[in-house]
Length: 135
Ligand code: THU
Image (cartoon, rainbow, N blue to C red; front, side, top):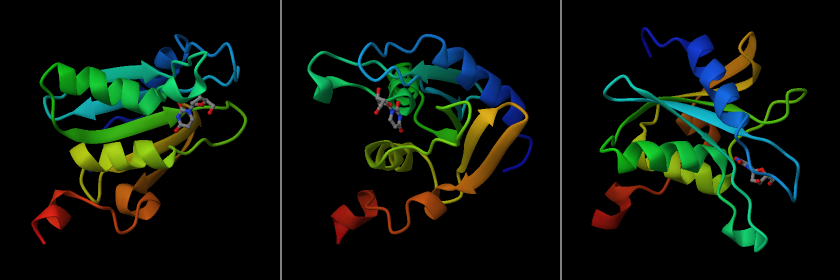
């Protein structure tokens, strides 16, 4: 958890949030991940008239990174409502766990000056992982 600039990651999540495509919920979410190479990828939620086809901001950021060859999440920041803290949905927590570690920092922010940091295993205890497939 050393040397991670949480403020910079939140600012990038806010930048991603600006691109949110939310004609149905009008609820914008932005995310940003720091990868193993040190690059930052942002993402936004992308909704669909067939609601179930919606993609969350966290997964947009993660899939952008993985599709560029990045397979390690060092930290992730999430900004939804600017008035309340917005936590990742269950599916996104599971996807974060695929590329993160138990102690990966999850930064839940309202803005770059107002955020809390959790470990992944605090928000996804008992995660199902590739280890379970070997049992
Ligand atoms: N949403 C996210 O982008 N991330 C989450 O973790 C929670 C929900 C989006 C999906 C949808 O576009 C909107 O928020 C309302 O559910």
